[in-house]
Amino acid sequence: MVEIKEFNLQNVSVHYKWNNDKELNYYDSDYPHQHESFETFLKRIKTVLDERNETNELFEIHLSENDKLIGIVDIHAIDKYNKRCFVNCTIGDRKYAGKGYDVKALKIVLDHCFNEKGMHKVGTTAFDFNTSWIESVEKLGFQQEGQLREHVIKNDDYCDKLIFSLLEKEFQSNKVEAAVAE
Image (cartoon, rainbow, N blue to C red; front, side, top):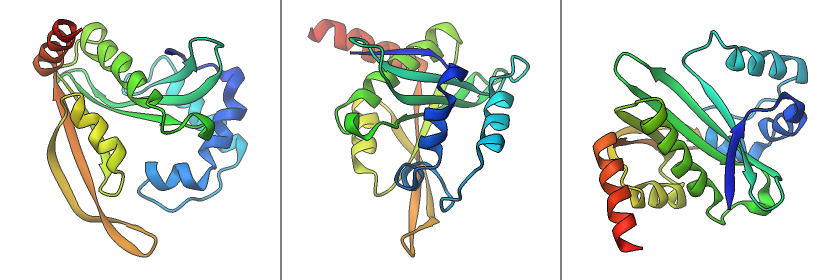
């Protein structure tokens, strides 16, 4: 269905287009969309991809059947000492939005975070109006652990930002339950 691949700088123009998409920004950012120049974007991406950067990882979401790039996964705030991080999955190609590809990508990334990176806790966030993402992460076992009340302004109204987390033991338990159910 989907594969997670290392970020490929040859695809940077696609990512740049998504980065400057107002609708994607609405769901992903605390701040109103502001156009970013290609040079600034490329410099920022190269900083994130620098092997000395141990607090971020970027991956691409590709369709398995034809290798089409459809989205991005951002693992950030990686804290090796406390074994925790945050993840975001964005389907940038709108033709593929709303079809569950982000959730499938998240499952793969969770496996990476817990089983390869040795994380104890993985978090994600959502604005209160993003009910589809909230429902998706809750189905995967994430629990809401925080609410930043009236945290950002969207369309001239304040909205809450919700914080969710999944512990390694919950992830492993959910994997066992899913295997038994199949």
